Image 1 (cartoon, rainbow, N blue to C red):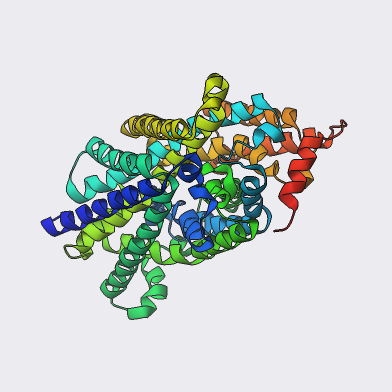
Image 2: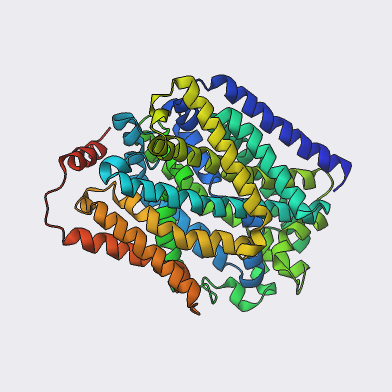
Length: 490
């Protein structure tokens, strides 16, 4: 990286902190901090939901898979996410918005107290918070690796730089800072992504037809939809996991729907996000697919995208691409911190310290900022020690994906009338059985990646559904009232 690249990156950081300061002036209470006062328009919510599904890991771990296995990364990641969010638009997203409008909910786990009971809510809140430490740590580690490729700085320095920039703007600005940063980074990503796409087409020398002729230069299996170990079964498992994740099991994504003005607006936001997932990754991944043509037999395929940028982009544009990668990661880590802070301060701390319930609006806002700060510090520590958890891919796939299902299934299915007979016992059975399955697979590893990732979720799903099916007691009137309130059209 040259001076011009650092200037571009520096200007991005200035923009980021300016957004945080602007948002700080708009935040007057915890509702503003956590849900933007319920005023997110559909286009901003949709773009933020889409962007919050990316991180630097896409350009590290996923770039490595694109290098070694080709087109399958689009099929089992982007395409399954797009389908999952499309289903979410019709069945889940509007219900999240109605939780805030009809029941005053600000955090994704807040409604679980009514839907199940206090112990179930606390287990999901605690386990989910711990899982997000690993997931967010993996995202910070990913961007630190990219910074190392571009500038030669140490991984630890990269983690600290990204972590503390995120720490500043999200702590002062809350969700408003987060979603407007998402919008800004979406524009930056568009510019950087299209630039890389055009540049690689130019270098291949076949013009627009290079989109198709590229695959003739790659091993035949790189054009296949499925490439072992990323089989049809693996894609099917990821489709299920992505549904429970992108519909709100990943809490920061639920917040994008909760913060809209109505169920109808939340639905439009989800449809926009789904459309972007169907289309944009095809352009974004293209340079990653082409990397083996320019760099054969890389010892570390996860560095392929960084090498492509350094090789083919002029000074200034390298800084722009790096800024877009920073923006991707900061978008996810900041939104994670904001939403987990809501869970901690609204659902966990009031149980541990009842006096929190009596806090004034000013005290509640201060608590929100303190919990956001502390959570971010913990994720920075996890990122520095990412190698101990299996690296970036290990943190984000082997840990997060496998652990997500057991807590997301009671959250997402609990919103739907079809599962209203599944009560607190069903939820606890789903959580415990899924976590036990995860532990057993760590003790007794299996050769199938699909089974390793998907078994905890599938076991949790069957436990939740089957125990509800055999339940004979009458549904609690409060649960009936909640489900009916979520089912009403706007």
